[in-house]
Length: 437
Picture 1 (cartoon, rainbow, N blue to C red):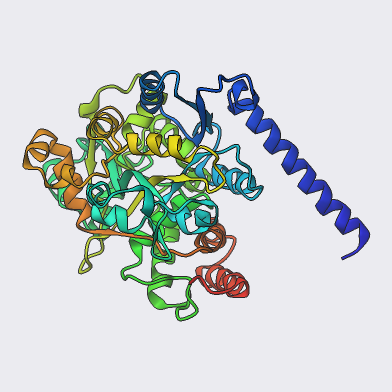
Picture 2: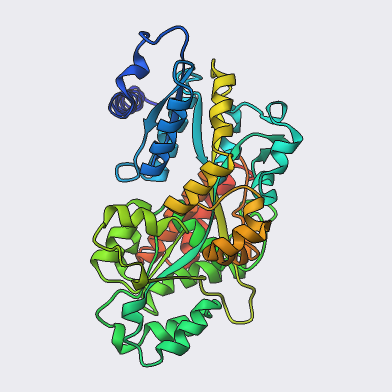
């Protein structure tokens, strides 16, 4: 490497570090850097994207523990940071092994990669406490057989529909019935080509090169496997079919607009509303989140939440996700931080999170207690979808490999590369980095 290349790399590293410092100063309350706190109060630093309801719950925790524990929030709001950007910033900061972060939230697929910086939790939780967590969510909070994260809320892929627009179709009642049982992709495309929707984007999904595109891709790949293992090839016919289908939604069937390649979770809702789209691929908490951005859309009856489509002759397949709390191994405040983590697993907090923000609970009782299922009709619906849920591949290098694949999938959607070219290039880069196991 020549001297000028080294200088460029050093300059880029300096700029990134400077940006990180500026970001932390902007989004961390001033007391984060202050030593003026009373010796009797333990200050916990918590990194997350916080909704209004979560802020209320944090304020309640602070009030209940006044004089003993106070949570200081490092907020990376979705309006300013996509989950991908938050992952990059959080990774850079944790690598410094700083004791300035006690707790951080992590997407389900981040857990293996972030486990190097997280405190194992088995010794801090009783068997009874662990047994209250929904079994599948609990299983995926492990890495190398260690309980390493606490599930904050669960997610499952769903589809939102503008019911008022769907009524324009002469077969409305029939279509509505099909949608409630998961319509086939073949039928969904047929509906989308109807002239009544020609002035509306029909199906909107996140297709920028980030994890949202990987979720849609995983729902189209009809078998359980680790895509990024040396034992498998991205040139497998079923993988090529799934990738080709995503590309065809935009370029062949034309039921999705070209602009999907610009969409992530922080601008998807606005695009959906502003362009009067008919369908949107989202999550159970999408509508409440979009509502806070678009307060004039409070007419809930205008929107249906239905299962995503599936291929004829194939099983239904909905990607499961969720966000989790991880305790930094470098935290000097583990006892107080654990009290805050366990706070989110209380029945009351989980209920508020679901009722007010649409976050699916992570406690087993919400899916087995008939009284709760009778109380929350939509919870029954989500429970049925969870029976068909699939997880994305796991592994310490998954997020890196996912970034590579979605980058090339996006180029294929933009018709810069054919599907075969995109998958070959992605596979070459992934294999060069090593196994995803």
